[in-house]
Length: 129
Image 1: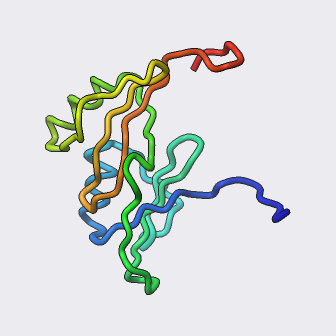
Image 2: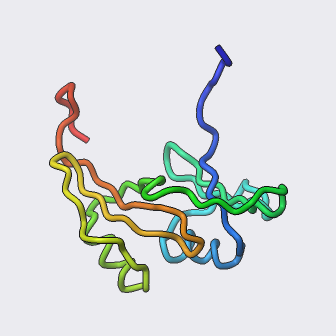
């Protein structure tokens, strides 16, 4: 069809660059990609890049990512949640156990939907996460 090769990045719309850099870099502890442009900061997270984008710079209205749109894998959801809560991050409801994984939902300062995630059950093929 289109010859898609991979997903290059996931765009997170933000309104305040400094506030977003502080949240993603310091509060969440994500490592900024040193190769990213200073006007378009990116954070490399293993298999995906999170790119902070500024809708007003490209003539688009601000539209938040939906509830839990970006799932950030952590070793222990409860420990990560406690650290973020201590840093002032508010979570939406209790940590959810699906019977396959744990999820805890929160938002960045612009209201974008994020979650902490950890799968603990084997995959359908029997391999473990």
